[in-house]
Image 1 (cartoon, rainbow, N blue to C red):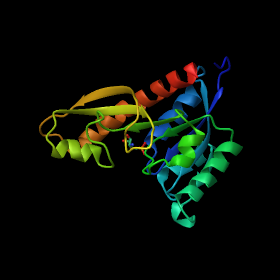
Image 2: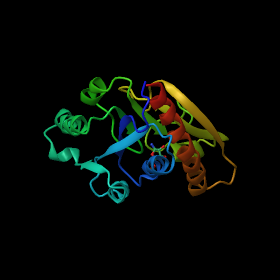
Image 3: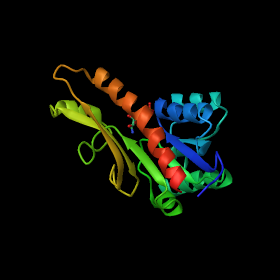
Image 4: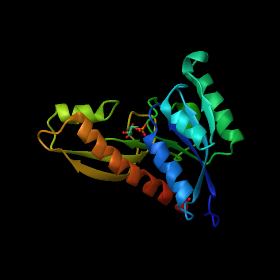
Length: 196
Ligand code: GRF
């Protein structure tokens, strides 16, 4: 249990636009009671927009394509070195489009959290919003869960439902889901850090 503000050190993992990264950066900047410090952004996509956000906020970045390593274990060992040297306590996945392997899972047991745009176990995988629309679901949502070796499996921490209107476009649904995510993720991460 940390009595200090900014006690727990976070790494946020990204592959894309990084709007959830931004929500975490914003809460840290504006909320004096925030119990974490974002010390590293990790990306498998060296050109993604999330990295611009990290640089803007002057957060350290580890960005490398897994293709430049011999195999996934070597890639994750390089990430682990960066995590260790930044003294990271928690891994926060925010649009990181890659499965976490045994190297990182065993180094951070029950300390890796993910956000997914559906009410898991419904619609796992990379196209959850599109899949919910294609299935003509009347409701979808957002799930925050601990990460295990599966694709969007692992214990659910919290879920928020989002209604789907019959004539809703994918763009409109994505916008509503992002809105929910940007409130939900900082809230659940805060709870994890405070209880840690
Ligand atoms: C979010 O919808 C998240 O649920 C999913 O990937 C998306 C990332 O968006 N895992 P962003 O990069 O945070 O804007």
